[in-house]
Amino acid sequence: MRYIKTIFIFLFFTVSSCKFGGDVCLIPMEIVRVSGGGSHTLILGRDGTVWATGLNSSGQLGTGDNINRYVFTKVASGVKIIAAGGNHLLILKEDGTMLVTGGNYNGQLGIGDNTNRNVFTKVASNVKMIAGGEDHSIILKKDGTVWVTGSNSYGQLGNGSTGGSINVFTKIDNKTFSCE
Image 1: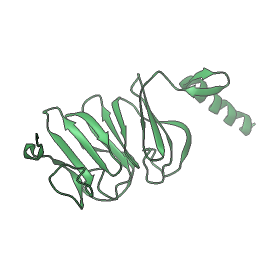
Image 2: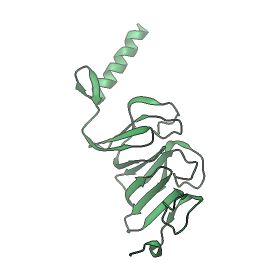
Image 3: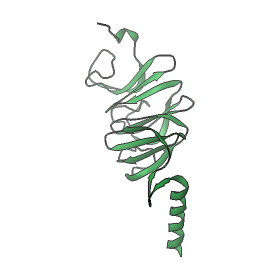
């Protein structure tokens, strides 16, 4: 009897949260954005829900654990933009707050340390756009300023230098923009 109850609960959840293509849950809702990281994939539904699948060894799916997922799992709601980095994830909420999760060995989460996170952590507000690189992250604030964090081994942070990393979001000085 317990086995049958478990199956019923699974089927009820599947039916109530997915549209079907045959007998398999293919698409949980109308998809408006997709983003792929190093070994993880994200989709954003028109309803603002974020679904993730793939490698989760650094917590990059934001599920609160480090267990890999092989089917899309709902990880957030109220989201308007998603961005996957190499092994981290950035989401921009409808209210302009940005949250991050995942690998942080180069400070790519911008939270002030180099510790991985497996739950979403708020790091910025008044954000307009987000992007995740292999080991760095970039945000565009509503006031037009650009902020960066993470690895700078190839000058990808645009701060006029190479090497090292930054583990907190740092504003890029307009003087580093060159027009040739």
